[in-house]
Length: 331
Image 1 (spheres, rainbow, N blue to C red):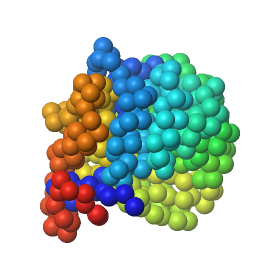
Image 2 (tube, rainbow, N blue to C red; image 1 turned 180 degrees about the vertical axis):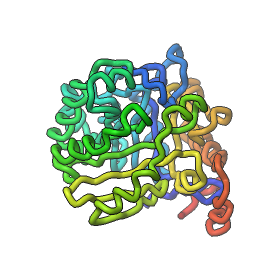
Image 3 (cartoon, rainbow, N blue to C red; image 1 turned 90 degrees about the vertical axis):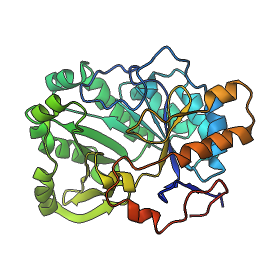
Image 4 (cartoon, rainbow, N blue to C red; image 1 turned 45 degrees about the vertical axis):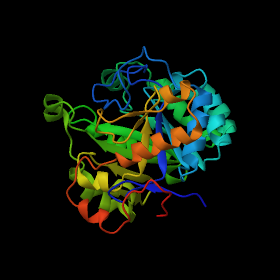
């Protein structure tokens, strides 16, 4: 059994999220995108071979689930090879977030390569609204991508909808019916996402609180559970649809449950989603000829820099776990 590493607050790191291209590299232009990558398309991207190597190194410490993001990861021409190499490195699960527009053609090949499931953004079922929100008249392509992913067995498909007051918040019922038409919880999960406050004026204009629909969902649900990671409530409705609420990451509960290390498209460990000032560059070291042992030390350094961005209620966590050690640590 692989050893795992914990940060100074006792949070074990078991998953990695890899941006395959910069957040500027997307065929959509959603205003609210929180852009996890770096807005620089000029920097060279990490290659499939380099991705496989870093996955193998992190696997020594129990990293066994990988999420591929962007930008739009499906814009990478080598996406199938990347998935193949990650699976070859021995991880349990590879998933991918996408706007779905290229999945109609690619879903079967990605499934064959070892992709387990996909998250697909669907911000409206109305074509004009979809175009308004995303800046792209691609609703038919996204819907086709969702169906192709289900047909290929990339299950459950997670349908992600960011709710915007006065724009699409009145489509919740239609989205539930759409989810039901696809097979409900047997094939998909409808994730309703609360707008994150990255731009105050935009937030004030369009924020729609998920709290306003929680009671209604509870009344329709036959089962209510809570995902441990980020404390997300999940409702299994009487019609078989599963709805999950994704609340803003600007809270201590989000930070308490964080078990991810992030990797930028240009080969840096990113210890915290909310910070851009403490990245650890492993790709430059690789390209200078660094040994695996040297890369391991950079990984340990990145884990040691993990710190909850929002700290209330997190201090107690560190008191019940061993502190981070540069030795292998069981959790």
